Image (cartoon, rainbow, N blue to C red; front, side, top):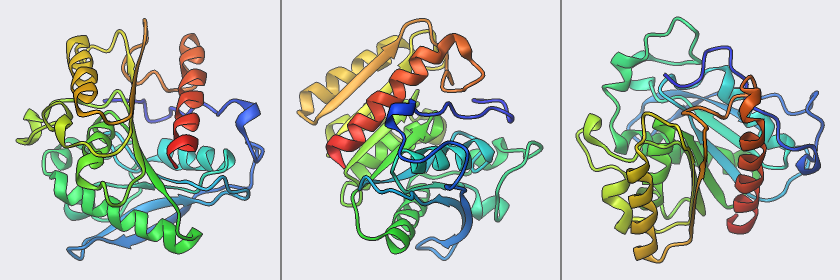
Length: 258
């Protein structure tokens, strides 16, 4: 599991905000339709002041729960329209997901092409609501896995991808992971990892960085010493510096490539 259910995303640094944290960017729950006809849930937050690029948020294993709806609001307050998706329309119906949701049986049914089809539908909805614009993906843990792979599979839709402690191998899904697919990545990549992450070995992070070097794609891989998996949680005051730096790196990456 990644964040506790009651976790909240850290706020962006105040000097990067275009709207106050207190209000004005509440996320709207949507029902979208994927290419295969599946109905799934998403949360859209529209920015009152627009810096240009849009964001599609790919959650952790629990899909669309409050952390990611609030994260979409945080992006909106930083000037980026954002939409967070739920993964489980095919197996669990519409969300959002509550604390008692038994996610693992549904995670085991996920397939990369279906997740990316849902992301593509969310990108289309974001552009329909907010105008044609570059879009980048931002994913966490399992969502980081999907985000990194989308730099190969959704290269025509995305301007870049961000992964927080994204899983780098795909054995659990019976498919190649980002480490195996690095040579197929066509869009800029930002990877943010914890140095004490027990789920993602440091040698895998190093190998991913090296393989991206070999492809020549623009990328940045940053490891925060001492930070665990899921350090991007405002309750983890001891990692506040890593959270702030993550926001700065991420928003700079979005500004550059979006």
